[in-house]
Length: 232
Image (cartoon, rainbow, N blue to C red; front, side):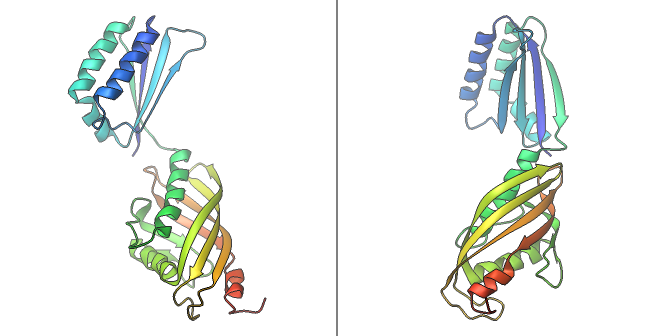
């Protein structure tokens, strides 16, 4: 689960504090595990500064806090503040940007040439996939890999993400697909034809940013027409 720490302080030495933060980043290069950091200044009180630091998990954040450089910077930070800074620890229970990035990552992974990369970076083990073009739903990581390999063995292809909309724990992605048929596909022998298709998928994510369910809609009939399997 993603973890966020909010550092709240009052200081009349904002520029010195910024330089201190820059020095911390430089000294912990290659060690610091924060994935994102934002520093903001209160519009109604220029001495009120808030830093928001994001980590992959609470455990990772605790390892970061134990770095000797972090301890030294903290003591210098306290000296720059007018009063003792406060720390608020938050477990992230909803992050729409993280969910959108995970959805985009799936399209990158499944399009990579060579051996199919691990999909557990994006999907939960019990992932449930709904595809109206399949007689049964795809459930579980092994089934998801088999479905992906079926497409990968039939086509050399790429995805382009056209649009994404996030709402709560769900992300809708509109995509375009282009491929060249290099293997058997639904009984159709390799044609070498270049084909294209459009579609959408809605992914539902759990708190750690992994997808647990997906619903697909895409123009399979149009693809079969391009391959000569059905009349236009």
